[in-house]
Amino acid sequence: MSDLKQQFEQAQADVVSLAERPDNATLLKLYSLYKQATEGDVKGDKPGMFDLVAKKKYEAWSNLQGMSSEDAMKGYIAEVERLLNEE
Image (cartoon, rainbow, N blue to C red):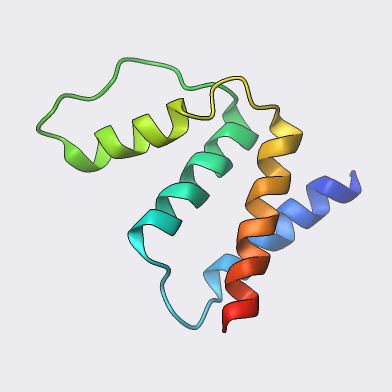
């Protein structure tokens, strides 16, 4: 397993153990970076305007279109490290 993959998996474990729940904007950023890292570019139809949460998630992920899986992993790791340093 690559070093980056191990760091990514460790960051996933670390984010669960945060003392405080991150704000919604940070959660959205983590979600979109995770999805881009694990699944690549967004797929499927954009959710309807009445499903606001799903729509925001879709849009956040869509904004990362074209980002490599490796860059998304690095971004996710950096964001989790930032959160850990704030504790």
